[in-house]
Length: 157
Length: 268
Image: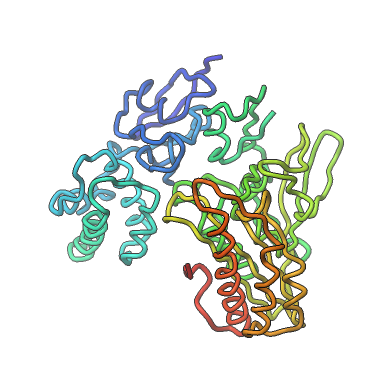
């Protein structure tokens, strides 16, 4: 039984028609056309579908689209300059991604961390992105880049 | 009928057709189920309280820090933002991380249904893998956890292959209380989380010294019934249960004395 939901996606209210068993990940990609959250494990293990739901990171494969009715969803497309400050540059400069499949989820997780912890330790970064699987890099350049972004922000602030 | 709170277990089970409920009821907009407060000397943890809420709660840090320690080991940040403690005991997988801490804290499960309410001791809650005493049409409103007397010390020790997603291969919760009382429970080492009364009796009235620990460890094989699965062999689980219990006993005793690593520090 299809039903209409209103989800604010990256600041824009969208009225979307969903089945009750559609997961938010599929609603975002197929119904709303927002493609950055990636379909990986579809069971909450890999983190490639991570989005912010009312400002908190969640696995969009584990949330039903109808649960998001009336809520705010932010994907990497919707992160503002403050959330991305220094982060994009550091990730690119340090070759932190190779295939890039994990990137949208890791950027969300890293932006969330830096939002409430401006000066994270290496362990805090590891903790924040644990559960965002990267099969290319071994994580070290990603962690280095998040720490560099934090450093960059504290210098320019 | 199935109740939907965080959905971190329910949604993948639905997708895989492991469950085929005629009805899924989302309870997130019901009032009063998100409470996390102190009532009559116990912490009341509502059905919508997430593991992230527990990790961040000053009440948990003050009164039940080992439960916060266990909450911090669940899944990833994104999982903890959704997954609830009540959902965890309703899913009732053998590795459920809240099982051993709630067992040693002797929590009570407050159930409501169309016939009224009932209160179930956590020890009677788990029936088997993914099976509890909850009946169709019933709902867990909250769990209450008595604040233990001081001086107290506790430890939750969890073994998994990697951080961020893996279910526990084994877990141990230890609570050290005044007058030499010890409580011990294991997770992922039997069809349900289990208390270990014989192990507790061997420790009763004793310090966690080498002799007491040796006596306790001898009783571990009879307290658990590990199996071999994709995460670990039963032999490995059996061996690690002893290692983890030893560490947890030391940790709980040290913390009871006001020392030792902060709650949440990984020791495996």
